[in-house]
Length: 98
Image (tube, rainbow, N blue to C red; front, side, top):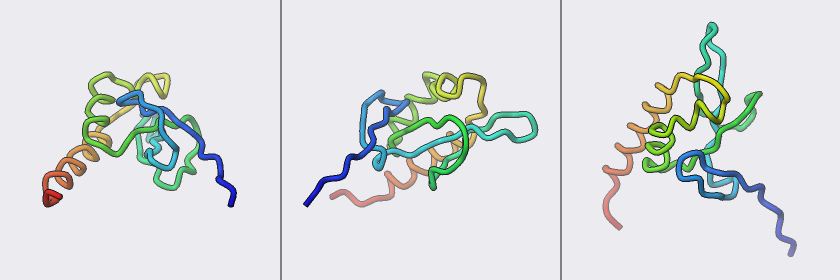
């Protein structure tokens, strides 16, 4: 049995390194001259990618530190990220305790 190598990426929120499979890729997409951060679930969008753990704490840190602007090397609209954060928070608070 051979173990396949998993590419490692750095979360722009917590700055922790993890397997690519455990992170969500974001890409900067141009919408009418404005760069917008969009989740890239299929990991196929062109351009630079920013990787983030799908945890509210990592998303909050990335937004607070303006890590998306740094990762994409310029100003980027993060309203989609903020919406995704609210969704994560709702899901995490609605789950019954283990």
